[in-house]
Amino acid sequence: MDYVGIQLILVFVCVGIGLTSGLGIARWRATTGRSPDLATRAQVDISSKSDECTASPAPDPRALELDPKSIDLQEYRLCVEPVFDELNIYSKTALYAPVLAPVRVHRGGIAVIAAPVHGDLVVHAGAAAVIYGILLGNLTNNGGTVHVYGSVFGKVSGHGGETRVFAPPVREQ
Image (cartoon, rainbow, N blue to C red; front, side, top):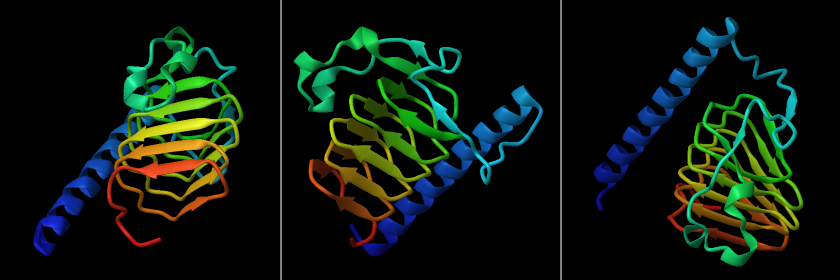
């Protein structure tokens, strides 16, 4: 693929991200009557908030390339609304909307994210994360398992564990 083709693809990706983010913020303003304050965002533990996520089956575990025997599909929480606050994930969670904040996956948590992530992703030991899309922040693996089926625009660093990116990084690391 030539240089112009790559630039064209990046333009379409950036326009898609902008539209997705703009629609999410517009929907947030329409439903809450206020703008998200990203500078003073509060931490959200989505494993303890039943109003944000509802229990629902996650994607086929064979697509996760994790051990299917260790995944109980009925235990996943499903989030379909854009996320503006920092996420701390302690349980099995599937996110199908843009994440506009940092994500931290703690021991025992499995995050399946099928949307763009606009913040940093930190995965701790004993945790796993699978991203179907792009990560616009930095990826830090502190001993967990991370699979990215897309591009990472930030820095990738690992301190143990397994980190696999199934697309060429956008910039060198």
